[in-house]
Amino acid sequence: MAHNFNLTLVEALNRASLFLSDHHYPAQDAQMYWLYYKDWTLTELVQALHQPVDAEDWATFEGVLERIVQDEPIQYILGYADFLDGRFKVTPDTLIPREDTAGIISLASPFLKAHPQASVLDIGTGTGILAITLATRFPEADITATDISSSALAVARDNVEAHSCAVELIESDLFEGLSADDSFDLIVSNPPYVSHQELAVMDASVKKFEPQQALFAEDNGLAIYRRLAQDGPTYLKSKGMMILEIGYKQGPDVQAMMKQAFPGKEVTIVQDMNGLDRYIHIYEGEMK
Image: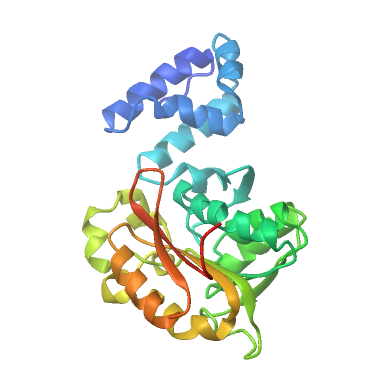
């Protein structure tokens, strides 16, 4: 795209839309990315449509568009992603937060309202979205978050500081970095659960840019759940709750292994907003 410093915003967006269309990307992404870039509401964008775009903004926007057509996610370009009511730093060392993961917060919230001082463990925290959102909403809870990746934990640490909340961060492969006598009232996790066979059907942006260690698991994506089933009973208190995000085809398999691991608990498959199996909920007695 050639530089032109005499453009209004509407002209810049039209040029960007054509550029994206020519590269087989959705034309409306130009507007969406400008909203992200300027952190504007749609109303603010409309009000600015006939204002000139300054040279620096145009050069930045061109650079963003060039990266988009290389499949780079906008969240990595901008360095942040929004999750529920928070904004979180993201880098290629962390997965980009997905809307589906908000269901874990919904399932955990009634338990934490009833037990506000609960001890909570977030396994595979990545950017820290689960631990930080729970710490912000339930500040009396004692929250620990682990990740196998030191670089992901560095991002999580920045997010903990930005949100001014209390979360203990531990570098750990699942439970291995914890003390043997640690135990928790609530364990949450969005672990790697994509099977290697699914790589072929994944978006190019995911394959090229997101951290594979945080996405893929052996044994058709079930390997981490087997380890959680093996060690979870040691670290979950007898009246405790565990909530796991799963792949939409994994419900029956993960439910079966968790029923075997936690014979005294209810193990329920919960659907996401699209009606797909997305969570395993392990708890004592009837769900409130």
